[in-house]
Amino acid sequence: MADRRRKRRRRRRAQRRAVFGAALIVVFALLVILCVQIFLRSYIGKFDSHRIIQGVSIGNTDVSGLTVKKAKEKVEAEVTASMKEKLDLTLEDGRHSEVELSAMGITVKDLDDTLQEALDYGRKGSTVKCYKIMKKAEKNENKKKFPVEYKVTEDSAKEALNHAMSHVLNLPENARVTQSDSGVTIVKEKAGEVLDLKKTVKSINKLLGGSWDGKSGSVEAYLTYIDPEVTADDLKDVTDLLGSFTTFYGSDGSGRAQNIESGTKHIDGAFLKPGEEYSANAAMEPYTEENGFTNAASYEDDKVVESMGGGICQISTTLYNALLYAELEVTERSPHTMLVSYVERSRDAAIADDVKDLKFKNNQQTPIYIEGILADGNVTFNIYGKETRDAGRTLEFESETTAEVMPEGKRFVATEDAAGTYYTTGQAQPEISARLWKVVYLNGEEQSREIINNSQYVPVKETVAVGTASDNPELTQKINNAIQTQDENQIMNAIQGDAQAEENSAG
Image 1 (cartoon, rainbow, N blue to C red):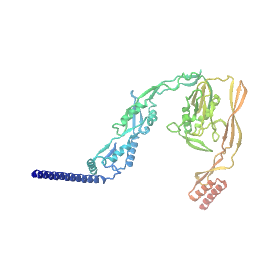
Image 2: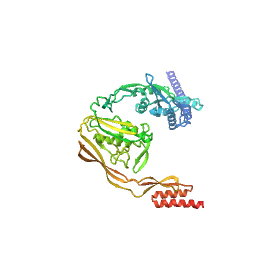
Image 3: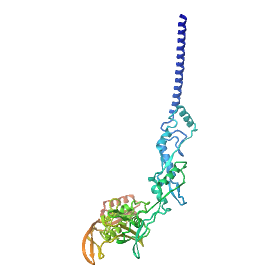
Image 4: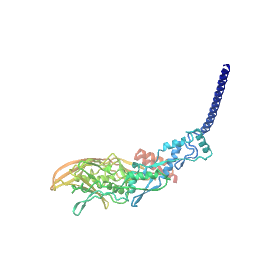
């Protein structure tokens, strides 16, 4: 009995020793693992946590050693560099055109997420794996490429794609109205091709999202077929010329002429259903090179300045007078700040960004069609509709000046002419109040007379150029200071002082 007890005690002691030994082994192993982890993490931690490690690229862009911000700038810069490349858009029948990538608004899909992955590479995940990655990076043996996907959207690419393909497509043509020897003629519409934007963008993104090398390429473009917006049936009630007006602009190839020709083409073909309102400004804008406009002289208060689209007011003015004869309802019209040369006072209609516009409404029971014609330096607008007025009814529009006051004084402008130069560059114009009368005749007899608008034109002082260029900067400053006062006596004294200084110097 005692022997059995002793044996049990010996077994328990052996078991305790075994458990203790195993525990010691586990503790030792954990300590070893902990030490290894500490060593590995310490090694990994010596790399700048704000910089991407060596050997990492995003797409074809090497971003080694860069912060996320700098890496993003580099990727976007290389994307921008690729923007000069062109894609060839090819239709099924072989017709093709090119489009610049820069015009399509190409972007890198999920770039911020990809940059974060690049920064985390070698830092997140298995410690041993991260250690091996960092070792390779330290030895410049690491090669890790994060793929990127480039893309365009229908919104970003729409304008560029339509512009690129417009010259190779048989675009739909609206029915139109014109005059011939036989009178008002309707030219039938033509169905046409337009770009299938959704399918074409998908085709482009398939290339960009694949193995695109950032250089030019070729993709398939797709078409769809549509009917024009205005058909001959829409114009069946447009049978008569209601009003017409012409002004001369001179097709001399100048910026102003270009703007008038471009703006007229934007308005030509306008179709208004009964009750619809039309904005001349909305029809022509934006005033950009892409939309056919350039810089030319225009009015700004009492000065003539260069602006994009300068000259378009002659379009709105010509159209305004055609509307008067057609007796459509003009809902918005503004005079210029200064007089214009191509119509009488109070017969002008200015456009200025979103401040001034020419708007009118189709107050007829049938549609209205507007034709714009450019010929021999003249711009003409014809307003067509269904004539309902008495055959003996005629109109006249009389301009009346109600007040005219010449401004006092002069406006002095510094120029780079030689100091002492003094000459007139612009004659004074009076402050003018004017109004326009509409006179209605029936079979030659006056039936009514009414004022349809009032106009106010600002005065313009005589403009005098004053030269300021001199080898003596003090003299130049003296003349400039005098010009700022706009006092003629002080300016003349400064000029005479300059002349005296020159004479003394010569003596």
